[in-house]
Image (cartoon, rainbow, N blue to C red; front, side, top):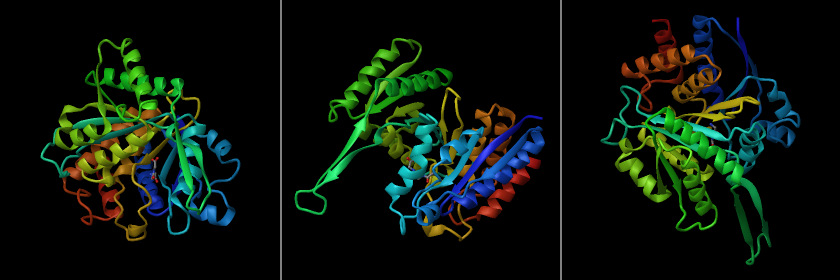
Length: 348
Ligand code: GGG
C-alpha cells in the first residue's frame, strides 16, 4: 500500500482546530481509497518563539525535508509576537527553502454558499508568486525612533523567479480556458513591474494558444468585484497575489472557504497546503472556525500527491455538505458539526 508522510504544523489560534478537522477527513478518505497517511505533528508556533526565541528549531527545514507534504494551519499571535516575526520565522522560510514558488488559490462558490456578489458563475484560479518580490525581506531601518528615521523595503524580482511563475501560470491557463490575466502596477512601479510585463510578453510567444491580458492591480481589484466571471487564471506578484486572494476569498463567501497550495512544481521537496486565513485569535477556542478551507487545501494536497480519487472524494463530500446548508454562513454551524457532515458525506 502506498503511504505518504505528512508533516502537520497546526500553528496558532484556530490552526490546530482546522488541521485536526482536515486530518480526520484525510484519514477517512485514505481508508476508502486504500492509501496510507502517516502524520507527524510539529507544534511550531508563536509559543515556540516565546519559549525558545525562534518559530521553529534550527533543524526545522531539514526535519520537514523527509516528508511528502506539509499541512499547515495558521501562523500568528499578534498579542505577544509581532506578525512580521511569526511570518518571517515560519511560513516564509518554508516556502523559500522548498522553492514552493507557486501559490495556487482557487476562488469559486461552493454549492449553497451565498457570496456578496450578484455574479455566481465565476471560477478563478489565482497564481501568486511565492518566494521573492515584495516579501523578500530585503531592506532596513536607520535612525530608528528619531525624526530622521528611514525605512526601506526592497522588492526583488529575478528573471528566473518571474519567468518560472509566469510559465506555471501559462501552463495552468492552457490546461483550463486558455485565458490568462497578468497583474502588475507598471504605470507606477517602473522597474520591477515593467520587467514583469516585458517578461509576460516574451513568454507569451511560447504560448500562442493562450490569450494573455495585462491589468493594473487596482483595475483587477475592481474587475474581481464587478465582473469576476470574465476571469479565469490570474497571476500576480507575492504582495498583489496576497491581497487579491483575500478579495477572492471575500467573493467566494469568506476566508472560511479559501484554500491554497504552495507548490514546488519540480517536486524536489515537499509542497505545503494551508488555508488562506490566518490564526483568527478572536474566535480561537469557541469551536466556530470553519474547517472547509483547510479541508479543501487537503484535497489539493492529495491531488498533488497523485491521489486524484481521494481529492475528488473530498471535493464531492464538501459540496454535498454545503449544498445541504452546512458550513455556509458564519455562526451557523461549528467546526465539529461541519467536520462530522463532511465525514458523513464521505461515507455516502
Ligand atoms: N494559513 C496561513 C496563515 O497563517 N496565513 C496568514 C498570513 O498572514 N499569511 C501571509 C501569507 O500568506 O503570505
